[in-house]
Length: 260
Image (cartoon, rainbow, N blue to C red; front, side):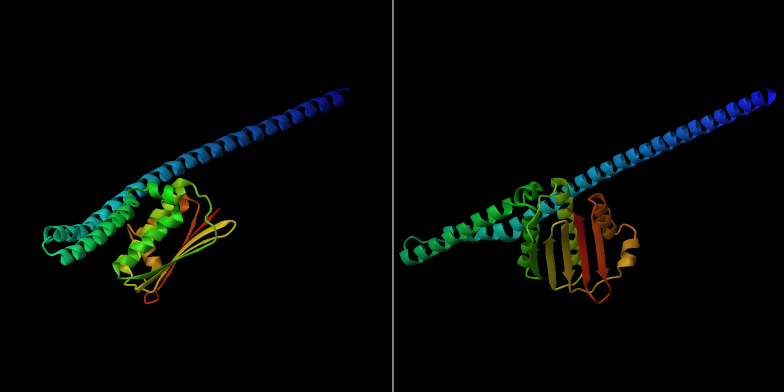
């Protein structure tokens, strides 16, 4: 009888210990889950904040570059054409009909050119044009600007149908494209630049290649304040991969890959 009672007490103690252990495991598991959930929540908020800041910075940079472009166009192109129109009109001699008709026709041509240039320039009046014209067309416009300088031969190729990309992501992709092209223009000493926009079922690829002097990619990536790190950060925020291949004397290849 005593032995049975002893075994019964031991069984109760053992069961209680197991129950306490299981409860402890559950409490620890729940606590760890909540801590991990909180950490993920904070990380998500941080990424959202970084994305918003990067998006705002991209908008500001695009607007600044747009204003610079407009300033150059007004000075170099529109101003020049307008000056020619003014000269033609002020030197028009109505007592010489043949020469007057010729000058009037020339002025008409200049006026048509001025109107076309103004319409073309209006496309660049802000980052909203990316949503209006699409990312592919916006990049094509950048390539046209390069060729217009006469300093480069830039070739743009689009393979596949452009998918619908979130407007915020399109803006950051466009700013990345601008930054890559600006770096090639300023530092590469290249004469030829190739841009490929390739889209398949599940991957968006934007690739840039030049025949310039190249650089040590690892050193540039580790340099303080390097623009390449800004590109890398922007790629991370839109879940894209940035690949940079460059060596001194061998040109540069930069590829942005974003899953769709």
